[in-house]
Image 1 (spheres, helix red, strand yellow):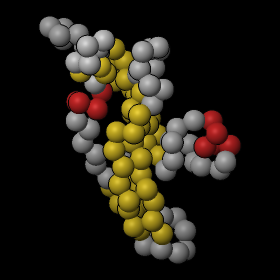
Image 2 (image 1 turned 30 degrees about the vertical axis):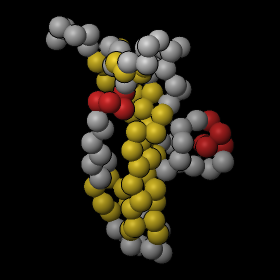
Image 3 (image 1 turned 90 degrees about the vertical axis):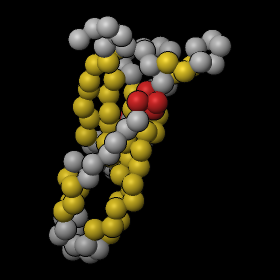
Length: 107
């Protein structure tokens, strides 16, 4: 993703990456997967790359053993936690992308 400071003053942004599993009732609504504080000079753009370890998608079974459930996931990137309240308070719309984790043995 590319972050831009379109203002006339130097600034910092804390870019936050959240992970969610839409359509499931057994996973958190969203969980913080990564973040980075990024200083930007006025007018500067910076391309950011985040690596999210697969362990961040893990849930725990009844015995506390972690596992990654197959299904649809969403990564949400922005300057605040995802949700209508953040937008209502003036935060810009976050960027999101969905992907599918296949069950073991599927392509």
